[in-house]
Image (cartoon, rainbow, N blue to C red; front, side):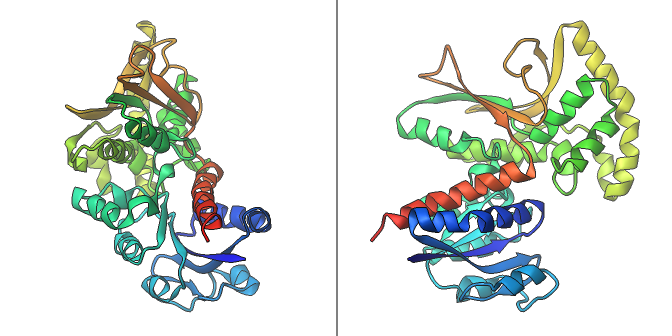
Amino acid sequence: MKKLNLIHLGIGRVGKALVRQITKQREEVEKKYDVRLNYCGLFVSDKGLLNPKGLTLEQFIHFPQIWNVNNAYEAVVATPSPFILIDTTASEETYPLLLSALKKGEWVVLSNKKPISGSQKRFDLLHKFGGRKILYETTVGAALPVISTLRNLIATGDDIMEIKGCFSGTLGFLFSQLETGLMFSQAVAQAMKKGYTEPDPRDDLSGVDVARKALILARITGQKKELADVALASLYPKTMDKYNINHFLQKITQLDGLYTKKFREAKRKNKTLRFVATIAQAKSTVDLEAVNKASDLDSLAGPDNIIIFKTKRYFDYPLVIKGPGAGIEVTASGVFAEILTIVKMISFTT
């Protein structure tokens, strides 16, 4: 039986869900593909567990109470090939580890947007050394086939005219709650409770998380852009960035009246509000828009995402992808699916 080693960075909510899903399905994967998924490392911040031969059941049970490694670089160096470096963190600091693994010819699977939405130079380097070995479908649309669809359109010679949509399940849920009459601060609290937001909800409410997704899609189409090139409108005043998270959540009650008013004004015009990203060759924007009732964007509910591809082939009738774009289990399943893509490749190689 072939063995595929796993090094996992970021055992937070998504990370824990991924560990559960893999350990539950590991025997089925072995039976079907004759490949054993062997966890060699689990890391939180700068500490973790490492056993190049595979973590024992006891080590899994007691993680993260016990540590034997101070940094994940040791895992990248010590783990036998082939391995997958999994990044389910929300950190920019993982970039050197990812690049190191790719330079060794290993695989990288990301749900973390920051390494590939950093500088264009870093993006290019990851792809120069990674090629097809860097996978990050879940960075846009969780488990929805957004990036794979875009790559297929490009690979088959289609011309991308515009990509438009609501890329945040968090903000989709938020605006669905606002439509029911819930206050802005209450809707944010509910989104946090359900695990839809980033650890700091300002990553969502600032629009930066959506801008990162827009940048990733723009770069896949061949555009050379930086995050600052995406025109972005925040859902809260930037003066609130100075507060800690708890203080920020208290302060956003000041915005309740503003968003109640905005929704009433949109409703009078037979429209509703959506936080919309638009990616085009000329310009990429992320902003609050009043959209027509009965439009594709109006049809969103809860944490759904919608991505609309307008291309040379899909011009009069754009290609639409819609479905859950947030959630711990959904995101983890998307990462697991990419791991299985690698498993299949290894299974069919001699």
